[in-house]
Image (tube, rainbow, N blue to C red; front, side, top):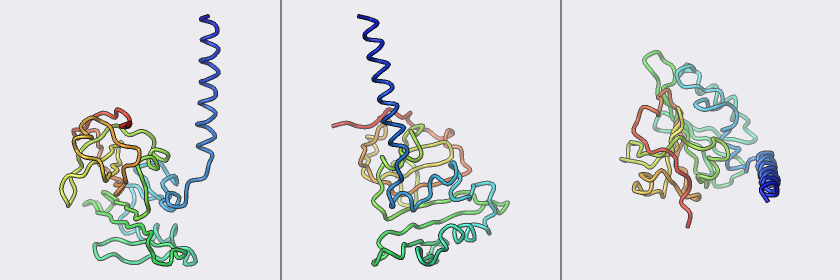
Length: 199
């Protein structure tokens, strides 16, 4: 009987591993691929690394990635940033807003990427993996629920702060923005990741 249990466990483990492997081979959906989150490891985004990339090279790097005028339109945002829209989106409903702040050494301190696409927590897990934990991230509008990675924070909509105190989020909570930073988020108070809330 123990031998049968071991064989079944091995077979089940191999099947689960195969399913995970095959799922990771699928292309990203367009709303997620547009963000280029797999181009380099966080806190790097499209070749822009906080603490390394000179701030005066950010626009040039974005232009290099999104400069194909047959696919994207890049416009200057009133708040020292850029808005990137897809040309094949007639109402420009899907857009990426990119903002950044420089250090005293004139490198990028943090880079904030937000998307009007319908992104949820599951999309982020596919690309960034499991977070370290959850916390309330201070933003201009007050406290925002967030998923914490080493040098990256993902702001989440629809997650009540009480829920984040448990270290859990819902699978379908919406992503508001992703901030890449030189800050090490291990330093801030957070609750260790404990999984998803299940109904």
